[in-house]
Image (cartoon, rainbow, N blue to C red; front, side, top):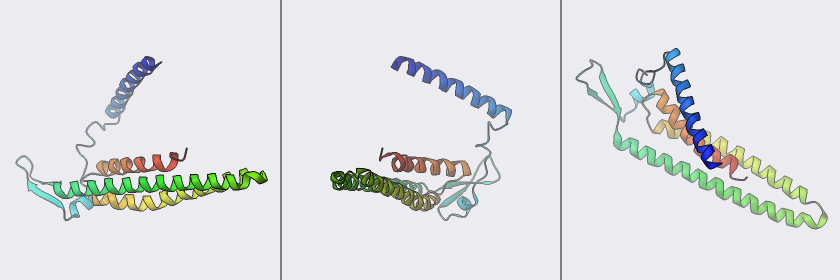
Length: 171
């Protein structure tokens, strides 16, 4: 079964890449990322550096590497902190739910304890998502990405890492 899944995954990914390239050619987006404009926020950022290029008349902009590395470390630390907070809250809610079930079980009402625990879990997921959305925008802006595609990729990566834990850790 594992060998079949491995072969199937390789064939599927190869086919997917072929379809992706076909659409990129048909839609004329093969060089989209190479021709993408710099973001206004990137140009106006005080940590964006400029140098004159030998080949182009326009100046070349690039981020300050030290500041970018600091920003990426801060982002990783904050995302990991949020993930640890989710794990701690989910564990506390699971313990609370277990205690409630123990309290209500002698009366034949363990369903009430399960319902209260599930409600607390739903509220914590919504709460963390709401808070994290605001922090996510700030973190990605702080990283000073040059193009819109880079900005979106960074946002998606951080968002996925947090939300997968927030939504499914309780399971």
